[in-house]
Length: 130
Image (tube, rainbow, N blue to C red; front, side, top):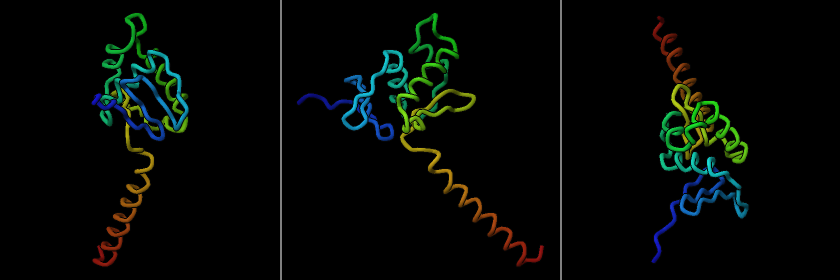
């Protein structure tokens, strides 16, 4: 039996690293070779932050390896991902991460938990009389 293809789900998209294809449903999303290489590099390190310099060194041509070139490629890749662009995250001070989960959707739960703890702490202070 042939080996299984390496695929990564990026929101509603499926990225097949072996076939070098990004699809959303039945629609193929066309990527340039550089966009493919950036997405593959990040997808192989799923949910881990990757330094900009690492991506540039591994993916970009020497004359194209400065930070603004990488930012431009990532920006175009996000446009192509559309509503799934939130999975291609900027990690401030480090670089980028391709995330399976969506941090934006987890945030309200964290805010709610923090708010509940604040109310409980305030209630305890009132009851104790501090």
